[in-house]
Length: 125
Image 1: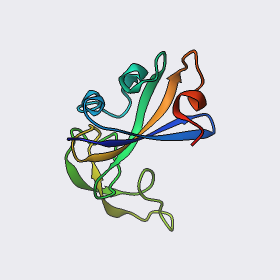
Image 2 (image 1 turned 45 degrees about the horizontal axis):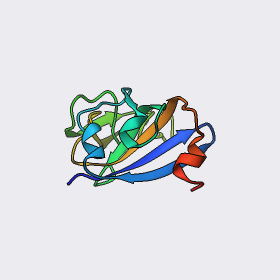
Image 3 (image 1 turned 90 degrees about the vertical axis):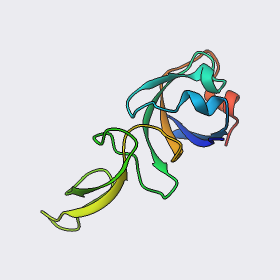
């Protein structure tokens, strides 16, 4: 059984929600940047965009790595590393951009709003 923690962001407010089977099956194989229908998790009328996530070891999903594999990348600045001085680079571990069974958290943003507000649908958490 695959279970994901979803973090849904709308403007300045974020909502957390855990989903299990069969809802989680709709996220498997999706990539960062793809859109999913809110009906999948009970948010009728909403369209959500996958913006990132983390795997079970805490490594972030990175959009420029294909698939769901875990790999080490030499990074200079940006996602997952902020250089302490100019020109510094470091090898960091990342997970590919596809959502898999190894993914624990999926970050989503609202692309299209539904008729009811998220605070009403997900509670004021």
